Length: 116
Image (cartoon, rainbow, N blue to C red):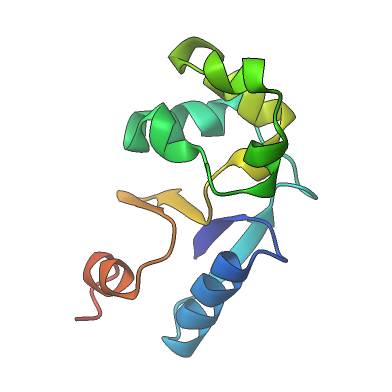
C-alpha cells in the first residue's frame, strides 16, 4: 500500500488520489493536518528531494509568511519552519519502498509506478 502525504482538500492531492484509484493502486492518505508530521519524515523527504523542493512557494502560506522568514529560509531552519507551517510543504509526497515522488505529474507516476 502506498502512503500519500498531503492535505485532503488540496486539489493536487485529490488528483493524485484519483489517479491512484483509477489505476487500482492501493493507497491511503496521511493528512498531515490531521495525522501530523515528524521531523524524521521531513528529514527523509529532504534527503530525497532537497529542502528547496519541499517548499511550495506558490502557496498562500508562503505569500503570507513574514518577509524576514522568507529572506532567511535556509537548509538549517527549513525543516523547523515546515513542521510549524505544514501547508508550506509541496504536495503530495510519496516516499517509500524506493519510490520518491513530490507533486503530481501523470507521466512521472506512470513511469515510477510501472504503468507505462
